[in-house]
Length: 64
Image (cartoon, rainbow, N blue to C red; front, top):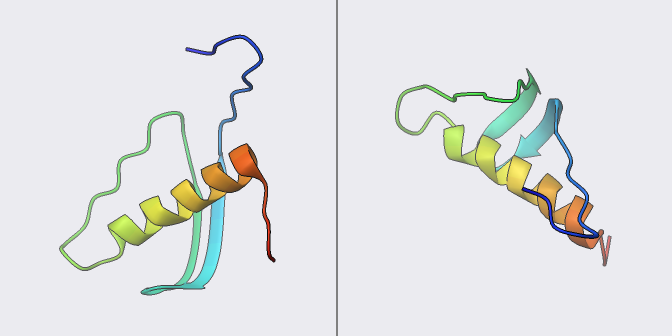
């Protein structure tokens, strides 16, 4: 739920290269996307990419 003055974003596509254990990843995202895979396959790293993108949208990029 949005509060006054808050903007909501929907990330629909993710592209990352050489982030932690991920060599190259391209994903189309739906409003509900489930990541399934064996242990140590990079699921948490994909979530970390999404978290980084969300933080960048919310706070901007500094020091880059």
